[in-house]
Image (tube, rainbow, N blue to C red; front, side, top):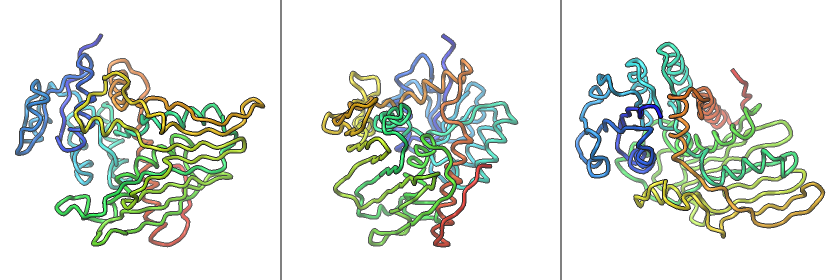
Length: 352
């Protein structure tokens, strides 16, 4: 096996604590966590004693040992910090959303090409158990031709978290770019680019200042993908509802990985990412002339696989799991949502 990829984590907030740190830790032969940026605290020392805590981003950029930088900082810092790392000749993983504008995304993609380094985006929800199961069902055409797709990413958070950058800022700060970047990415993976976008964006929480509710329609040939998210859903409904010419698939529940990682579990534990039987999806369809109606065991999720796939790309030249051009299209869709909501009309969408 090749030597581990020397890695630096540019922030140790929720993303680093819950997702990237634990995922890297289970691949010690593939990744060496070399430096972690914490401006004032030393939280990472207990979990990652092998890493050096630094106070300045320059300590990462100017370190010739660092090969890979995880830019997992607040959204408004993604572009500038990713740009600096690319200019320093580092491979870069950017937390979702990729950037706040499509122009910034294009510039980063161009810069990565110019410097001969890898650029990708942490679209981790591609590795959720429900999405993996849904993708297999659609890949095997178990529902026939899809006629309607609906995805939800809901939470219950009826308060305003004062002091959080997610509660203030411009129209690109809020649930649309935060959670919307996940389910838009999933939809593009399944169906490709739509021909048009219709979006309704709302602020529903008392005292809310950023979008906390959306209803998006991505228009495809002969069907619509309906994407919904709200911070005021206390009783969760289905995560996915898909109807086709041969049948339907409905998936309840949420992937358990995030909650497990918040409790300091590591994604190499036995039965990792498995679903509770109560949350298995219901498939009602006709397969090769036979009617099937029952529960389908969920494929286990594996968020850590993002990094094992990344290692294979950097060290072995395999295809990149999340191409930056795909994440650019996610930002373009989100921008079309902003325009649709502003103009109260459907916006035509074209591939570049």
